[in-house]
Image (cartoon, rainbow, N blue to C red; front, side, top):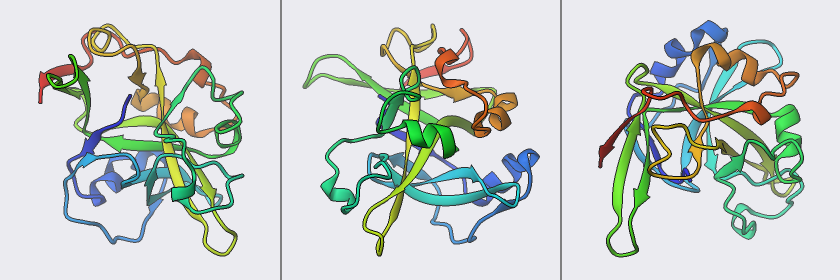
Length: 206
């Protein structure tokens, strides 16, 4: 949880959507939208700060592999798509990224399942007030020195009231006014994350 989400717009839309955070650099090489669904190990867009100021938009692997892993991505056996917000500051796999490498993970929706194996029901979660929203994310660079790769994870917290009937965890959906603070490593926000307020998430059968 969350192991499936989607983004329904061209990548160029993110340049406008997140422009309040400063200039955004990107390669302008984008696939045909939508990216739906995005599954573990797929490539997906994130936005992260750059030293010169502003953000860069990059497309990297979903499923964080920590910096201390020196082999190829397929040799790392922990999925790493989600990180528990209350533990990231202390967990060896995520704590360095939490201190130094935060990101925003843009999305239009995400999915959860309920029910027993063989009869599961798929649910689609959206944020009506934001057709594009941002998960709190972390990214890292790993792999052999001559062939490094980058990857990211999405933070989760206890669920809010809209999410609770469907799963006991929820991806951390940042309010727009939280975007800049989340990207600042000096802000120790993760321990305080809780689920989204009642009425902010719409749930529909997928």
